[in-house]
Image 1 (cartoon, one colour):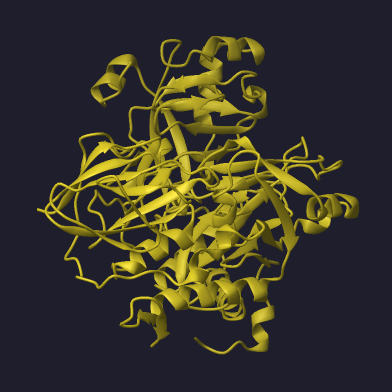
Image 2 (image 1 turned 180 degrees about the vertical axis):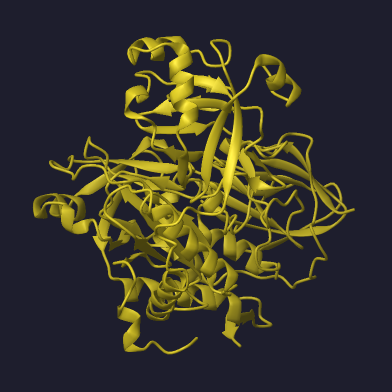
Length: 317
Length: 242
């Protein structure tokens, strides 16, 4: 059986996919990859089925040995990757042979790294998803540990060598602008507070995890009072009494009662997820139609394109 | 999808639809917490669930609202809004009593009220200037409505607790509240489905499992809940742990 034997899982390594959709009504967090772009590209490189699970690494530091012969792809935060000590690039397919040792270094500038295995990674599925939400405690082995074997979930496609187009990772180099759709409570905020929210530079604080990212800047002066708890979306910008925003992420609670000026677009949430403590981000208003069309284009791109034979570009089908 | 006619605007109850994200609509059924809302929200949840819409991703009901999450490739915001307006009207008009009649489902939960399972029981009785027995009686006499699920899988927010025994959360939350613990916070009551940190005033423990990965949540928004006081032996016989 082809497998990766984990020698060192690094800082924090969990299995993540598209997330557990449809169970918010029972109070279950959605979970899923924090950086949707990087996650999708890792699977796309290997022609993995939609929703295939990957390893999500915080910061990096993973070492693994290959048993058998398999293809992998590594995307996300830039880190030094080596196979048997030789540097290899990220954002492309990698062929690993029996005994090869894969090492992923630590990322200096960003946070999340994705490691996809040809065929997707096998793992216990709960309610249609292999995503692990550590806080909920449903998984017997929530965090990947040394000695674990990472095996393919299904038949792997034998794909030719491929590299993602340059624009695939351009988002990591762009200024981290977080576009948000104003919600119905937007009007409850004072004009001055909305200007504070949308014109200043926010810093990502150390109190940022898979549940939510706390931002710090000049505090909003008069945030509206709490509301009756209602269903929450990942990306919701909560403003508690201290006037400092908390942006909810993949593992967020399902309902809450802090006032919200809006919800950050799904793709920009990945941009935020990649910021380390101290990283600077900006909030910018957008509108529903623009945000939804951009998301639709992103989704359709991954569903409707196929690799050209050169392995360097994709064509719409 | 059927076309939207002008009749769509004539809703049985004034319901607001707001687009809150690129893939979500929030339906607001009322401005204040009211026991007539959960049955109406549950009726819309049922209606949307039964329709087996391929673009429907999730439904998250809460006190006065229902969050509808959809797949933005399967539909778009205009279609989603149009469909939802129709579905709400159908759900609320096909069952004209749905906003006033008692819902069909009542769940009885046995509770062992005692200082060994409810460490705040005696202090709360003192706070409420009553006896432990009277406090238990008041808690069990009320029929509660499930207003929302959240905080943790299967955690049901129920109301309304009789004002005479309502009590704020503890000023400092406990690091670990055992599974099954029954608590009061303000005029809400709940059972902790799993062990977790928590700040509610604990008055007893329920031996019934409220959430498991096979049957999901025992309680749903709109359900009625009655608590029944049981003794130590029955608690243990029903699988409760001390």
